[in-house]
Length: 112
Image (tube, rainbow, N blue to C red; front, side, top):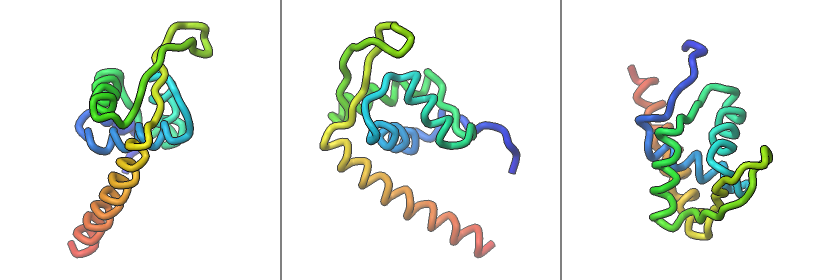
């Protein structure tokens, strides 16, 4: 396996789960969410704006996150996203589903 970063453009469900997990630690603005995912994945996962902001909009519509305007660490106006109670429940469901899927993929790989 190479060391090239993995973009999350096609993995909508996975991206939603990673955003929810990132927000479980506290409110963040969009750029900080992308940076946190990149950092915690040792620079392997990179989330582009074209994927992140539609994902955040989906999560807002579902009621899994809320958004409030604030000022970023660079003194710029930014929208800060927070996880809701329903978002925490959804994160738990998605995490369990993802773990089951990874285990199933592992079984297929081992049988080949």
